[in-house]
Amino acid sequence: MTADLFDELDSVLERIRSAPAVWLGTDFDGTLVPHAANPGDVALDPQVMDLLRELGTLPRCRVAVVTGRSLADIRRLVAVHEIAYAGNHGLEIQALGLDHRDAAAVLAREPLERTALRLADELVGRPGITVQDKRFSLAVDYYASPMEIRRIAVAAIDAAIAGVPMLFARHGVHGSEVRPVGAGHKGTAALRLREHQSGPDALPIFLGDELTDEDAFEALPDGITIRVGDPRPTAARYCVDSPREVARFLHRLRDAIAS
Image (cartoon, rainbow, N blue to C red; front, side, top):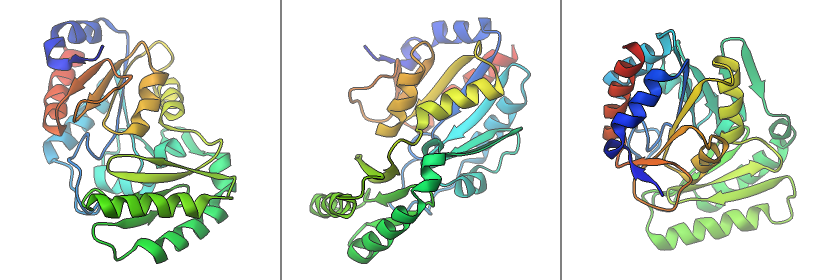
């Protein structure tokens, strides 16, 4: 059963203090920042940016942002050089000494591009819909759309990839993703980054709010996994209400690791 993080915070922080090393992975939208109707209208709070920088420079801690946004986009938005980044749900990763592009995603570039063009023709202009070609995946955001428009978007996505065996879609509360079949995900990215940045003995912590973050929660069953946002069935051990509570936890995490 998922517990409220702050009800269990003392035991969580004690586990962090006693760990030989800590690896922190976090989603971006809905986790470090609130969701926005337009994905371009977000900005990371400078205090949260400073916390990520401080955590990334502590001797026992390494940090990665693992997001559905493109690698270039998330590096621009977070702008912290001391941490690692995984874009496109882990299909492209950059960390000190690591520059990874998922092979299946590279091979699927052409059908992804065709699908993006088709969906842009069919959906752009409908209320609250944005279509983002992120090179190795495709996002259709409908966070601000009425339910009928969301249903139209989901049907259009399913029709666009019907008969395209290299692609599949995942539909979430805030939007849908079209991804390459056989490619990695946030779970494989989390495992790769923990191993590369900290080693297999590091205590993993992962925060996220969307369906795609469940892959990371499931990949880290012995870690401190934290679901952000409205309650729903989750593989995460703990939950918090909002990005504001995420920032509150990051403060306590920094103090625990630094002590």
